[in-house]
Length: 450
Image (cartoon, rainbow, N blue to C red):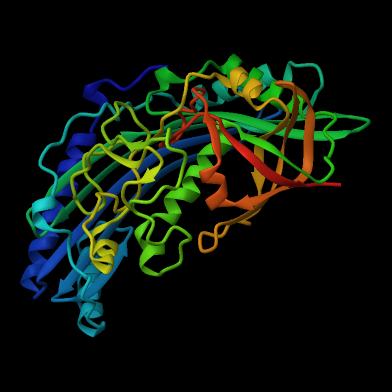
């Protein structure tokens, strides 16, 4: 899967153009009376091909531009944005942002992040790998993936294969004199299949997401994985209501960690809408468990030298020996809380849940008898109270071995108890996300079924 040669790659020229535009607009904002200003500009390009039953369903080429400007007149803030980078549109956006700022109320927490927190080091994190694939090549690859999946006995239909290529370049600049450039690629392959017999039908899928197309699993491997997952769900049944150990497969476990991030993020905290309010420095997970942020992972899905405000990112602990070491803050939420930014405006940069040595099979043995969750449904999670209740599907496990597939059940507990009662984290890490975790085994949850 070939990448573009440097002579074909014009991303650095486009970054220069965006940088010049950003700096020019900031100068104009200051000339218009703004005490501070910041600009975020981006260009995203991509190709998305969908193939179903051997036929092309959709081919989509995208090239999206974005330009956002925020100005501060003292403690009054105005923001405006446009998808058009021509001079008239940019000037109209600037005029609009200034007009908004003049009429808004003052907010003591408003303003740029502190100047001394701006990033000064910009290492190459190996995030830029343009993929030289044309429409015909993407269609052919989609057909290969689907053919591999449909070749399995018992697969009766397909929801289609998808091939996506994506490139993004972005600039963030502010009136502190900070100018940060980023460019990254993200490519994905996916396949969704249907299996059916007289007893019913089941659907499942698999996908791969990478920075470099050279890192993709093969078309055959992806098709086979999607087929095996779909066929393994045949004959699914419900369970009687019970309490038992529950193990979240890695691709579902990262959602549990996502809920945790939401509960310790600034917006929820300053609104007093989190069940982990005032929990910094307190035990929230078992004492053997550590969660660390690593912004500088090579080819990491969430890697970056600075956050959305230009603040330098850094390696740091979020949970240390089970204790919540800090919150997840940008400068605005930090000021509202009387704290300092943690370099997380715009989100987390590669969160690693440090696990043990157990692979997936060993984790099942460790659970013994209980529920393996491979899919969750619904929105029944409250960051305010910690209540967790979601539809689920997966497998019933007996004596460390998968016994049969399970569907049409609900799993319920409180997130506070779930985090406190984590039994083990596996070494079977799913690399397709900026949240890197293996399987997570919980002591028990309530299963509601028949």
